Image 1: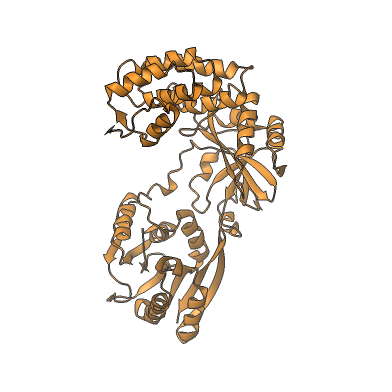
Image 2 (image 1 turned 60 degrees about the vertical axis):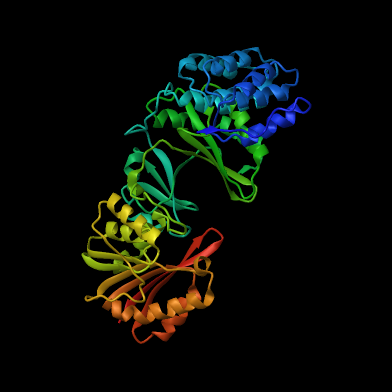
Length: 485
């Protein structure tokens, strides 16, 4: 995209002019302004380091021949460490295929540098590592099909660890706070399980650490991190990694301390990157001020939810749907007729079709965008499903359904208490016209008062079989299993 700049360089206030130009430039913008270009080339020799840094970044947006060599030469001549990252940021906007070898040489020099401030080395590698990786010069790793025993945590909804037990009976396993700990010789065997969120591997000696960057680095030094990588991967020479956290309050100082410490511990083994990374080191604050570290195999392809091509606001995560359906499974029939009257993007109905065979499935919704998303997702899942743009309160069917499964609207979505109450009242009154006697209704919602009210009003033909609390972050949702009499 070619962009026009409105800001010009004021010779009396060069710093501010360059900052304003940087703010105007979008990531993919190309600048074509010969006068500005010549001014910037001259400013690369300016006595003010901050001017040189911003100039180098801006020059990266010019696609003229020779720019990358100009920036590369400027980097080599630059004597101020914090300025050097500006040249690399400028190069990151250029086609650097022809100078990858030079960039790799810079990378090697930075990794071997014992004299410069690690903060500046780290900031340069943060730009340089993904730039080099984008040209495919780094040998991509593969997780071994078979490896030595490793303990893996399959994280689940809180208190729903039991939904995984039937699927891990052939392994050594136990429930833990975050999910289920499973010992396996092949992580691939666990990939198809649908009702877990993430697969993380505890790093030994790194549980319940003090929330202090230096303490965390020292514990990682004495951990089995390198052993895990050698055990799990076909090639463990060097990894692009990202450090992530689930802290209750963000702590950038701590994170920077850990990244700096990892650079000192494993300068040629762990290369920090913000994209295209192969592993994550995840720091979780499971208890106040207590941190545990885990390894996440980011490059491990898991196709179980690949069908979710389209996502809409408030749509249920597939693993949540799969978990709740596991709870409802004993009440489901094989080859049932299933209706989702508020189908959204279709995730709940798709997961229902995957857990037990379905004779006929129908999704209704008045939200056109959601319905189109559901159609595309169902096609991607290769499931024969039907969708109708229809208000469920006006839908008329000729044959009753065996089940209703749905994620009902909430006040957070509708923002109209009277309309929400009317919707629930009318929907519960219509269930007898939609589901055959002996059939079931599975409802996920946060509106417990409206459900309980309507169960009382319709007690002559609806029986509550199960009421399950579903913690979702700071909020509490509920999963109701109701039988039609």
